[in-house]
Image (cartoon, rainbow, N blue to C red; front, side):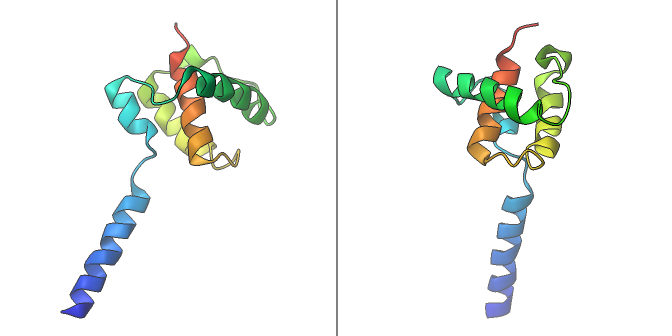
Length: 97
């Protein structure tokens, strides 16, 4: 019985670690969880961290759902914290087409 509980606990941890970043929930809701100041910091991080390696994409070139996938793959390469990841995402989706 203890092995079953341990396996269930491990599985719960594994499932949590494999879920997409919080940005997916904000994308689905269409809302931002960041303040205006944090979004401004997201813009700075986007320009400095992302622009360090490649030309910056136009934020309006993708929809919020597409940005989730892009951000989830690029944020680790840019060594962004979860908080910075959220701020950059919120900045990108706040840019109007």
